[in-house]
Amino acid sequence: MNKPLIVCVEDEREVLDALVRDLKPFAEAFRIEATQTADEALAVISRAETSGDPVALVLADHIMPGKTGVDLLVELTHKPGTVSTRKVLVTAQAGQQDTIRAVNEAHLDHYIAKPWAREQLQAVVRSQLTDFVIARSLNLLPFVKTLNSPRLMEAIRARTSAVD
Image (cartoon, rainbow, N blue to C red):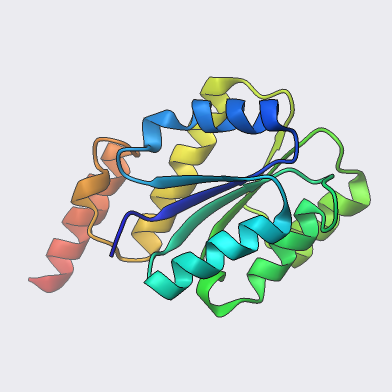
């Protein structure tokens, strides 16, 4: 298995570049893919699934050409390979109805309003990825430097106690 995948979906190149730049602290433990449409994101996710690489997190803008970010996140909820994928909507343009749909139908894990603060984005991503690796029962040691170390160490201790 390769590194778990983070997929960023944003149609504005400058915003996408900023998102990827702010995610650099996670690049040692996760592969980061930048896409500009929902269809591109689905293609990246499909390749990852074919390779057996887990899709840990999708950060999606809402308003994009073609399929919206909320539509993408809802679709991922119904795909067997991405049921446990963490979903974050990063947008300034989702209305109340779209946000409610994202929460109810896509099981949205977090909403980040644009413009975001780098520290806030990184804290949300760290928390979501920590939840993902613990829930997926991945080997937690490779993630201790990058994610929430106290939570990971607690999960390692709990796993070790369960085996004893």
